[in-house]
Length: 314
Image (tube, rainbow, N blue to C red; front, side, top):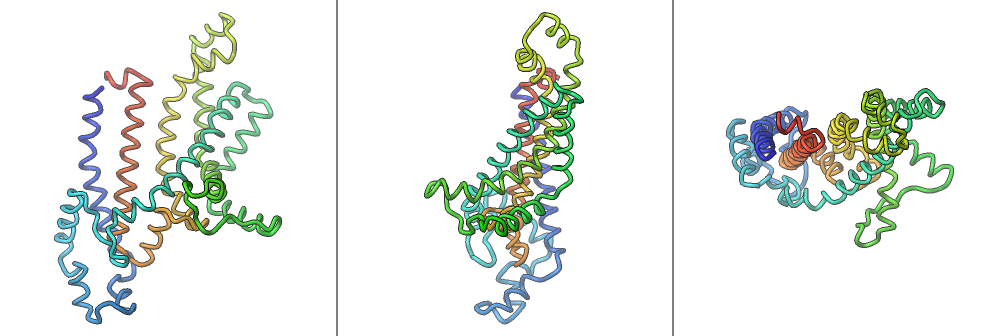
């Protein structure tokens, strides 16, 4: 198993180098110029060449990239052009908000998806099966940002209620914190649950048709025992794959939700950085998210090895 994990870790290096190159290149193709924006603000240099030299943007592209890559390898993600704070410190300051939102969304998504997927497969072609499948299709079709906007507008009109707009840390006031995060987390979880539910249903149906499951039924084992002991472990391997893919979408989805619900997480920070062309912040957050997604996929590969020994010994 250790050799399997080691091979996966070695493959991370070229992936991360490619990610840094793509992010570093693409953000410089965005319309707008950080130097022009900063010159329009008071307190910055009035000479464009001087400001470019101060920011290190007067160097050729390849020199800027090599310098950036060297700092990244030392754990330095740079300094924000606007706040003059280290990017890594800014990310770590906002990470708990995004992490809490993502964990709550995953909790709601799995809480909805796995039970409904199993029940839909066991009660195939009943009215509840059709209801759950219709709900899953609706969850895949409706954009999360539209649903969030409708919920906020409807609640404010019909019940004169809006979620708190001033963020409160969980440690300071858990009730107020959850009152602000539960709604966006639930909406994110609905989008996550749709695809996971469909995959869970399909895989449980496939496993239910296996010979060893029919043998378990023939022995007279209770339905709960057959599902728990004989079906779930074999049906969950492809479901774990879908969950890993959805985690990537979940991390990206926090950008929209944090902006709509005014949550001071990494997503809103990234959107503000794009608006102000804060290159180090954009590069740092994208690199941080890419690293997180790659490590999550590594964890999923390791989970595969435990669920199916053929993978780790193959």
